[in-house]
Image (cartoon, rainbow, N blue to C red; front, side, top):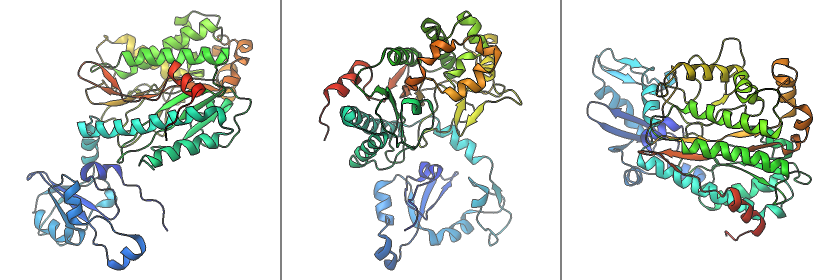
Length: 448
């Protein structure tokens, strides 16, 4: 058996077909969309089963027509008259057109940006799919919480989450499950999920299922014993405040990067109150960017057919000038990396503009965008030591003695998927938080 099939997202966006061997054509002038599917030989049915027929596809799709792919070359020969343009998503997908009746222009540049711009604003159908993915993922988080006090390892958390989603008809995860306990919670993309829970304070569970190819992205951080230690409670409260205040500010027209700056201001203020930061005012420490020792990633990203979905022609967080040349920063995959340098540039750009202006390349929120709000505070000893405690510019603001008490916390991240509405927002994520989360952990519940 070959690897599990995973449909390409641009193709699914146009066709709604999630099985291999297909093509899709769209005649712009006629507004006519055709799905081209393979004919399945009966001998292959014996080995691999059936794929949808043309009638099946017509019944479940809104394409204008469904045809067998063996007729695609003939269709192109007829449809592509001399001087016409064929837009292709990827250069390697250019068809052979030697048999056409004249010169046909093949454009491999314009289609993808146009599709990205369309995908960034979700249709009502897409919102419904993302909402369903969030509902299943939120219930799976609750299933983990309800059994947490009986679990012994990260792998059991992984198994409960993925098993619950599969049982609900969502067998595909939008990304690998992160179930980091103790110090592992300070690793943003932790994937091993194989260590014991004993002797550790918190678990950061970042996990979300797909529904009909649409993603969710949900994170909760909870106490393994059912009760927060004083240090863990303090950090969880900071992240809760960061998230709540940023969600309240989500509405059309807001420049998303200003939300990240607000989360950083809250973090600096609260870490000063705890004594982790010291020897300076909040403004002074914020301007230095020292808070990125503890909050080293962007506040959020788009969610859709990908968990880190396309953002269109603009960036959600870091604009064209926010990553100084030769400096660390930018992105790992599609996740924005925040360093003191990038935060400083973002802040200077925000100060230089009026409240409703957007720095070059940065994006305003619009109705029917879906974005995550996922602040976090982390205590990654190696990272903090190498880039901050060994740097005099930042070391003077960090109280190493107080910091030692917080390393066992590991990290706290809380993440929800937020839909931008006409005049505000709607939280699509229903996984328990706060007192409700603690009640589920300590009282348990029967979910299936």
